[in-house]
Picture 1: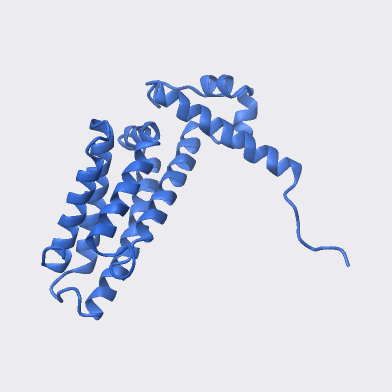
Picture 2: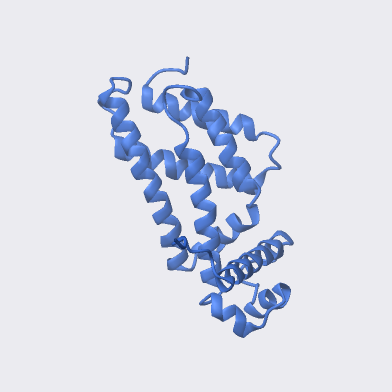
Length: 209
């Protein structure tokens, strides 16, 4: 009997490869110091070795590319953050510090894209709302974690899970973005540890063991 499993078509593979090449070209241009506002579709297409018409077959405009880059960046950071559990192997404040350090490393390796997202978010509501929506999803995840900690009796009942999650995600996100933008990474481990300890004390109302 013939297999019913469908293999990706050549066209789909070519599309995925071209989309990835265009995204890589943009990240390379940004790494050279070009701002996203200055970068034109003509420059992107030329660097990727395609025509403008081909570019528009895959993307609505250059903001569409940035939205996809933003989604990939945030998706990976959310996976890293969600891998931390309050208890168990890799848990606790030390595990959280390691998680923050991994997130810092991830963003630092895509610092140019992060800077472009912040740049465009300042004037483009679509990019700003997409970035905020990604944060909201992780806030929802963290609320679930904090409610579980309260139910287990490890977190005081006076902690507001929603407000605490918002402050942790939004405040931590800002601190990480500033760290990536203003330092060379030598003190990333120290910053990650301070973020973790601040979070830990604020949620558990006690120093880390």
